[in-house]
Image 1 (cartoon, one colour):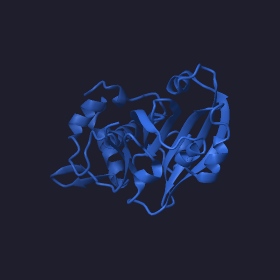
Image 2 (tube, one colour; image 1 turned 180 degrees about the vertical axis):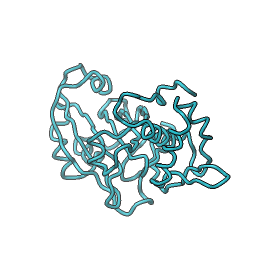
Image 3 (cartoon, helix red, strand yellow; image 1 turned 135 degrees about the vertical axis):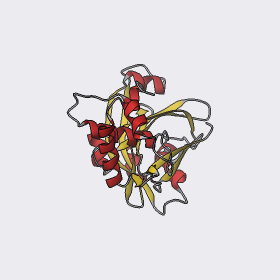
Image 4 (cartoon, helix red, strand yellow; image 1 turned 90 degrees about the vertical axis):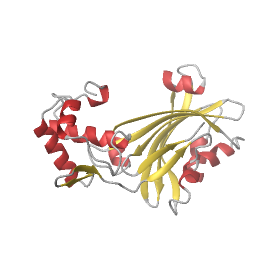
Length: 248
């Protein structure tokens, strides 16, 4: 598996090699490459995978043991610890509150910021608009039982959804906000998943430590007759949330 883009080590990044290896292992755990409760591959295999020596791998593993991610057992190896996380379903009708119902007692979305801006190429394609068309951008944070569990940016056509920022601030719900514009139901048209290190904004808004991994979804929601209404990018802390996919 040596040479995979996700495993590339940046030797001149200013971040120590052992920390980079620790972060790669965290990312591999987050995306399911290394299963919970299962043994981690041997040091020699990890050294080959990441292109470093065994001493560097050993330092990374030692750090993750101290951080409570791994468990070392004499004579048996190193195991990935199981961590209780929220399961967030992604399907035809993905809804924040409904998705976490039964797992948490309290859920809401906080509007962090909003702006009107020209649509980037990516946003324009998602919403079926011309590049540069005015869109409204909402920055939100999803919270469950007092803990931040998601951070998202969502874009809507400005002309059609003028005032959605006020609706969002009042309702704390994308679904309820869209209902004020006559949209009583909507479907998930597409979702693209990835994982990366949390950036500075993620660290602050999701209360994470440097090196944390976030799961990223890029999604388009449409009306039942197929009209695009929302393009979004959401980040979930991998240490608190797992994404459960179902057929769209």
